[in-house]
Length: 283
Image (cartoon, rainbow, N blue to C red; front, side):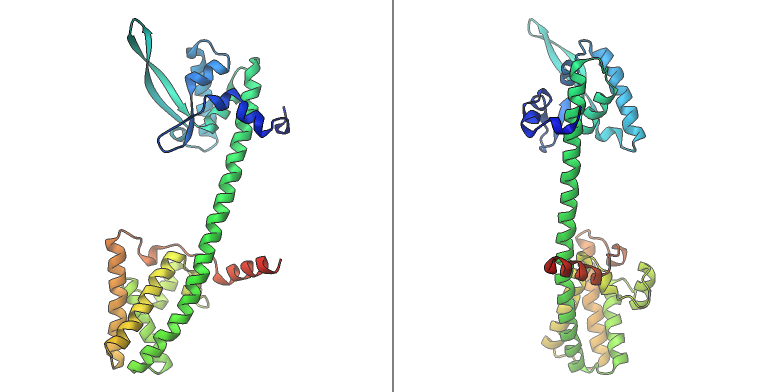
């Protein structure tokens, strides 16, 4: 039974759609007892065997069973206001699909269930793929913006440092290293390269994600402002200022429960992102 035989309206009218429930967080699930009746199982104990087979299939596919089969209890009325406890299972979309695959194929609604949950599962996969693409695109845009801001503010920081007496290329390298050491817990440029597995030719800033770039941008802007505001003079004082600002940014990250910058993962080269974005503009 091909997927193309089922339209969106067919899915919405499906009895399997009608028994779908939503939890407090808005996530969909199906009751095993409701599903068993739709699949033609008059005795729930026989349907339990199908659930067990589906759980095995789930485990064999590399999925965590507890994420798709949530065993629970419930109460039903048995007459005269009395109630008794029954067991049930909250099923994810994937769990329902696996149950349909392991159910008695001679039952006429099983094929319908296989088609319905196959289509629903594929729809969700496509939505997740698109969502992942969107998140990646948003992260790329943040990285491009922050990286450009870093270029601009690093120039302004260098000018402020020069005004404080940091003028020779070697002195500027030392000054920059002090800021990194403050922010990265004592790690300088060379050590950060080693920690992150970067080649000597690769710039640290070009492989930072947006979170790490934002921390470094804050370090740069606050150091520049402090050098100018406090009219700091002398290479040693400028170096100390850069280190102290970096250390305070690091302390703030720690207090907020954030990941230390040296432990953040590398991002793909910013130049690759720039090329990809340029292609989008010209295509």
